[in-house]
Length: 398
Image (cartoon, rainbow, N blue to C red; front, top):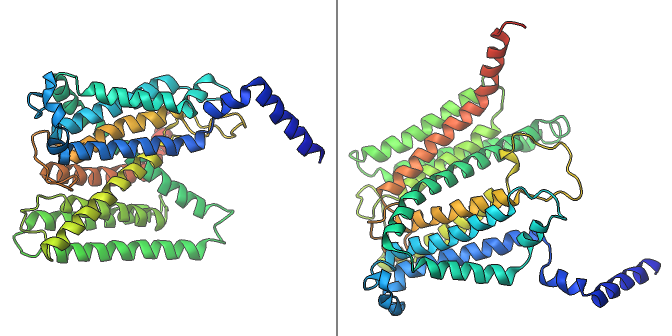
């Protein structure tokens, strides 16, 4: 009863002083802030898609703008880049204004977790201003966005490998080793079964003719990488078990499948069965899933700043921020470049069909290179400690 009375008095005092209303208006809730930024990012993705697919019929007023030259430079692929530029500018400004925030009582924490009305207006204004930028600058941004999207893919790749490694270390720790032994075996077995099944299905679906040499090479090399990762992981000097190569195999198989699916629609080696209506529904569903997956990937990568810290804290204090704000916004800034590349097929001169995303040979090769790079990074993470340890042993004692 006393605690209730005390809390009531505290709340009444806050209302009298006006601090309660300030906290409500500019409330500090970093966990909810993550979802708010993700929702803003999702809405921007949908806006860029709408400008690309329906801009020519809906945004007729754009043709009056001086920089649009009849609308062609503000809609389609150019429109996607302009929306992406506004989104990138917003998150990069947030990165600059929140980088280095470490304590919850920092004023920048309030800016990150509150002031939503101001930030929404800020983002809308930046997107509008991006349609007034000269075409030459948009072309330059499109070239820079290729690099920024690549940075995003590398960050995402390291984050995924870090999570898989953490999961394996957790399962092999003394606390959970005996208790989770059966679960680990089941997880590893299921991962390898799905990998092999996925490879078999890709052979069936995407190599209908012996002349489909490129797809055969992609799928076969994925199988080779899976075998190579497993062999390195099970080497006596490494002894990393089956879990990590199994889950990495799942990721590589997914990238291979996604790369083949990104091949142009006229490609003869992709089996596209069914009626036109069925294909349309599958295209729409695939588009929605791809957009949601992109937002989720950006969100999950953004909050995973621990694996990119060279000096990690062994203990977190109560007033420490729950995740790196600057890194979070940096990932979203590069994610803005990434979704632009997906919507234009990594090529500013490539015409994308409606309700399609990440289609074209450039998209295919980006994913394939990402798959190979992922396998290389994973294998290096396994062998690097052994190589560095042996080099240190060879150095003469001081």
